[in-house]
Structure formats: structure tokens, C-alpha cells
Amino acid sequence: MAAKQSIVLVFFVISITIMTTTSSAKSFQAKNRAKGLDLGKETVTSIQFYFHDTVSGKTPSAVRVAEATDTEKSPTLFGALLMADDPLTETPDPKSKLLGRAQGLYGSASQKDLCLIMAMNFGFTEGPYNGSSISLFGKNSALNNIREMPIVGGTGVFRLARGYAAAKTHWFDPTTGDAIVGYNVTVVH
Ligand SMILES: *[C@@H]1O[C@H](CO)[C@@H](O)[C@H](O)[C@H]1NC(C)=O
Ligand SMILES: *[C@@H]1O[C@H](CO)[C@@H](O)[C@H](O)[C@H]1NC(C)=O
Image (tube, rainbow, N blue to C red; front, side):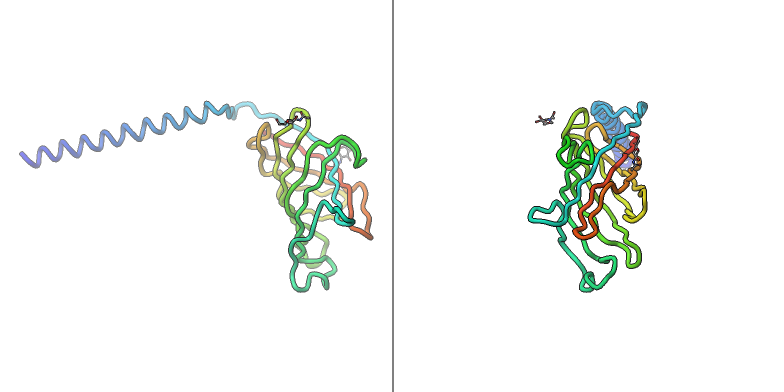
């Protein structure tokens, strides 16, 4: 009698557990749907802007925050790490319309060639992309004519973004290291 009761109890407990699991899975799916992530409609967006990286002068937009013991002896400044807060504008003219800012880190990652590793958030403050951002992470072989870097994510209208950025130096001052770089970004989101 006692054994029969406990078998019934175990069966009852298992049933309750299955019911709870199923209903919580359902409400989780419903919650995701409510947030409006419609994976069926992907959009391809192309954006063009100019990136102004100023390392010289009294108000640089990129500052060296770390380096290795021998960074200054390295022809590529291997180990130098910079934090940037660079304006993104519509044309190469620094006074042209501000579209957003590139904020993040880049560092010299190669002992032989000038090659940067970049981890940056491109946050937009204009037009339909105002408040949205894309994240770039990749290698920038700065001396190559055109560099391709992956776009690994985004926020706002760029949620779930993936794509690539093509960067081409528009202007570079070898004395100061200041640069203006054109970016063409293509993302699927
Ligand atoms: C961008 O969005 C912010 C916050 O919603 C708003 O204050 C600002 O006016 C907007 N800028 C433009 C140019 O629409
Ligand atoms: C970006 O695209 C324009 C044409 O739409 C082209 O003239 C320019 O060279 C491209 N820049 C890069 C970095 O690919």
C-alpha cells in the first residue's frame, strides 16, 4: 500500500515537472517574439563615412593607454594600445556633418608589418541610425590600400548585424600620425 502510494506520488511529481518545463519554454518563446526580432526579414544596409583619428596636438581623439617595455624600439610600435573617441563625418572634411563616433581600442599587433587589431563601437547620432551602433573587430593592415574588417554585431536597427567594413586611407600625416580614413560598411541585419 505504501509502495503504491509513493509510486503515484513520484508519477505526480514528474508530471508537474514536465508541465512546468513545457509552459516556461512556451512563455520564453512568446517573450522573444514580443521583442520584435523577426528573423525572416533581413535587410542589407550600406553606410559610408569618414573616420578622423587625431593622435597629435593638445586635444587628440586617440590616446596611448598602454605599451610594452620595448614598444618604442619596435619599428611597428608593437604593443602600443590606444583608446579612441573619433568623430565620424559625412565627407573627408572634418567640419562636415557629424554622423557618430568610433569609440574603442586599437593596438599594434604585428612585430614586422604595421598591423592594428581594432575593437570598436561605431555609434551613430544622425538620421535613421541615430541611437544604433555596429561593432567592428578585426585586423587592419594599415598600409594596404583597402582593408577589410568584420562587423560582428550591432544594436538598435543593427541588431544581429553581421558584415564587413572596407577602409581606405584618405589622408595621412606621417609626421604626426593623424589620419582620415574612408569607411564603406555593408551589414545584414
Ligand atoms: C538622436 O536621438 C537623441 C535621443 O533620442 C535625440 O536627443 C537627438 O535629438 C537625436 N538627434 C537627431 C539628429 O535626430
Ligand atoms: C566606398 O564606395 C565608394 C563608391 O560608392 C568608392 O568611391 C570608395 O572608393 C569606396 N571606399 C572604400 C574604402 O571601399
